[in-house]
Length: 161
Image 1 (cartoon, rainbow, N blue to C red):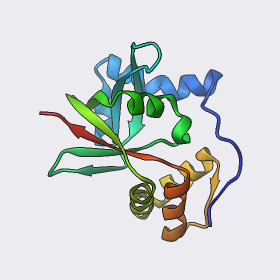
Image 2 (image 1 turned 135 degrees about the horizontal axis):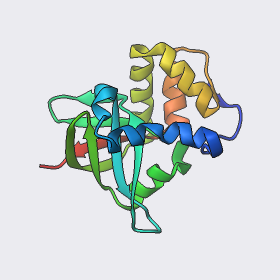
Image 3 (image 1 turned 60 degrees about the vertical axis):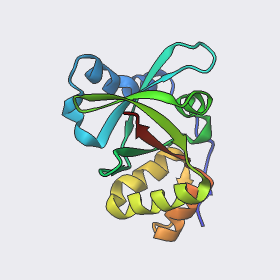
């Protein structure tokens, strides 16, 4: 059974600069270098009302519907996650494609299923994500399911036509 090993603070200082570096790639029109594995999410600050941006790993993509799946690695207290809960109208950029979208926070069971699926496809990256998030797992699909269900909220981002 997974357990939280420590509180997961949002990055600050140099660590924050490193986490924010990919945003600059998109600003310099070089986001395509990150391929389809990452996207730039532009959302509105819930208090400031100003546009905010974050680059996130795409944990899944439904080609038929165009929906992208994201995980809030720092849990439900991540600023971007709190902002999209307050205002789900967002813009995403994947590679060179930019589109309006609607963010939908998913429930615990769906988050668990998506985490287990992601860990099956990318076991090393999933293990690193767990360490970064301060969640200890035994590496089984069941443990990843429980980690996603209990600690890591997922979001579906649906492009708007």
